[in-house]
Image (cartoon, rainbow over all chains, first blue to last red; front, top):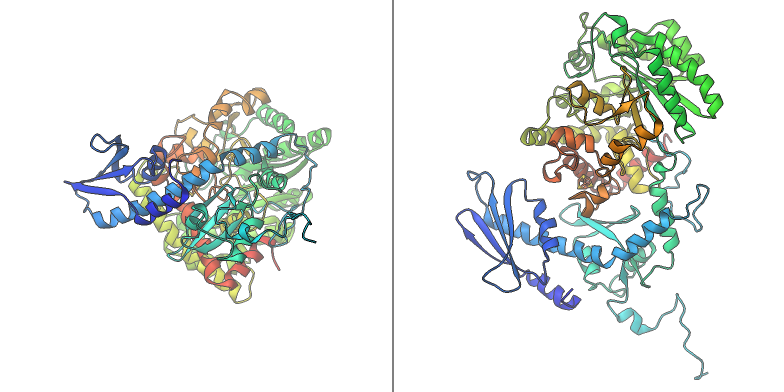
Length: 144
Length: 495
Ligand code: SF4
């Protein structure tokens, strides 16, 4: 991660995403040091049912990625303002998800490896496991 | 006194420690907006916290401090969302909790479905598989196939096995069921298995002899009830137009002989049902049922490969579901116990540390891991829906025949290929979804509706349905503490 958490927070607060609309295509220009290709792919995946999405390295701005978003059905009315603010929010959310994923990757691997290694079927939790509703573990079939 | 060393303990830390905003480390968790005010944080082991919008951002960017909200900080630490050490001190507990969440895998396949006959005396318009053919034996399971199916079933590592007879109309081949049960009883003793028997039937061919055999062998009856007569009879065609009357009469007889708890009913939701949420809920209640399973319309048949239509069908179903659920909650708020089963499955995953053995909502998927289907012709399929596809000449989920070896069927090349797609942890869209642990993966559904085993979440009816139902359940719990109490009563059972 190229930025400190504080810088990142400030950038996220300003929601620094530039865009322009050409015909019915929105062209977003995003700083790759904030929004990586991974983040863009995960975010725009959810838009790809209604929009054609192209993600490119920008040839006009160094260190930037360009995202082209055009509706699949051209006759659909294009509510750019609404769409842009949704995209900005989603970009932040996916950036946050990316931070957690990257920062916790090894701990996640450790949990899963420990969970399945040296497993003995009779093992019970060594510590009190929280059981918010006092549920009996022996009756675990609701259906099916 | 001045010379005493400063002692670091877990409980007491220096003042600077608490003012340092980034003194904690993140643990794996995901988040999802529930309403315009609230979001839910869900960690790797399925524990959740409902918090104001913006909390996830504050935690992740470490602009959140302990001083700001001691209670939340404590919750985040205690529930494994953040840790004060790079590796949490209770890592082993986390690992055991993770293992518990996946413990439905421990014993492998439990549900063995025997499609004992394809014959049926109904002509339901949505049914893909039945034959009204009078040529009795051509569409019945042959004895050598039954024997081979039982041999495979005995090889399952699972000590507790459910043997389910399906059709067509299973009772039309009751002699085959008797043969299968008698043989299984002997084999089960040899292999030390506990077998639960279930017959799925519309009850039309029910006789006293059948009932007595079921009684003496502890066979459970699972029947169909689609709502009041004007829905049920419309859905389930019979020349005499009396499917509803036969079902109700059959349910009464089964209850008298087998006991109330040994008879259950399943709802098939059709386009017609969607107009009658109240009537269907009320019908189940007045017939003495205290649970109902609001299942969505099956995509196998009429809703395949059409994204727009699927989306429409799913949002209509969701409206139906919410209205019906509201009605069921009303009964509960008036002091009656009445449970919706789909919500209960999800709520158990949300509110307890335990998994649920429900094949359509788990990861790894239920196919092969929890269910296997032996078709009437000796073919083995990964799920019940897989054989429906096969009836439409699509053999993607054909694993082999009952004569193949256990290893070839359950651990063979086909099973291995399917295993690439049965973890939602690795599927696009699902991998970052907060509801991952409550939801599941269903490659058969993906394939049937979208033509690919991976599926495409933005237009997936499976995703649209589950994401909205799970979100809605959180919204309901948050909106009214009385509803949360009702939901908890559904998990622990009748109170
Ligand atoms: S199917 Fe949808 S709701 Fe379920 S885990 Fe995947 S993305 Fe989430």
